[in-house]
Amino acid sequence: MTSTTSIDTQEQILNVAEQLFAENGFAGTSLRSVIREADVNLSAVHYHFGSKEELFRATIARTAKPIVRNQLKQLAKCEAKNETPSIEEVLEAFFTPALEVVLNSGDRSINCARFMGRCRVEPDSVREIAEQEFEDSQKAFLDAFGRSLPDFSRTELTWKLDLVIAVLLRVLTESSKSGSLIRDNSPETIKTTVSKLVAFLAPGLRS
Image 1 (spheres, rainbow, N blue to C red):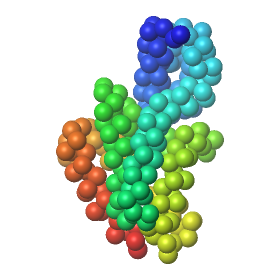
Image 2 (image 1 turned 60 degrees about the horizontal axis):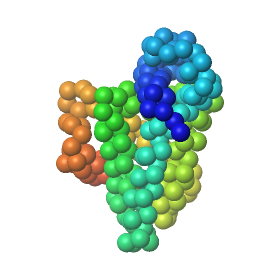
Image 3 (image 1 turned 45 degrees about the horizontal axis):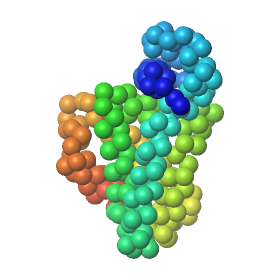
Image 4 (image 1 turned 120 degrees about the horizontal axis):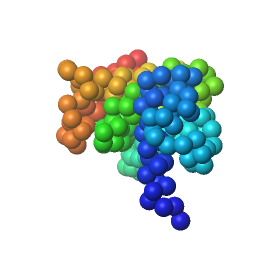
């Protein structure tokens, strides 16, 4: 059985790693810096994560898993009502869980958003680690895009989804700034933000 102390240590390491990866990227973050900022010893990092790459993967997975799980659940609900949901419904199922998970991650919400954005500009070998964690969701939503937008090739749908992800990350990483589309993490704000994003993006996806 995992002790509370062990769980707390893991969370402490992950929180520091998330902040440092967001600020400095994968190459610019050393295990030594994580150890120093988290105030733990090297053996604790190796015990829980093994290597910097696995620490990076675990940092992504902590956010990715609940997003992917809830995205797939919402998409399944859409498709249960309508085998071919509209692109608006698909986008809503994509955006809502991501905003809910990141914005409701407490004190780490800003670091979480910035870290997810930073993952997109890492070298291919590092970015692929992040993409693997979101692979199930991206495949499911590409398939849904294909059903909702049948006139486009898989390649076209792939870059359309890529642009949707870029917009989502931009909105999240700017959420702490004045004039942001996101005012707070209330359900009403999340719903309003999703509605605005869907209204903005759906026409472009159809063209």
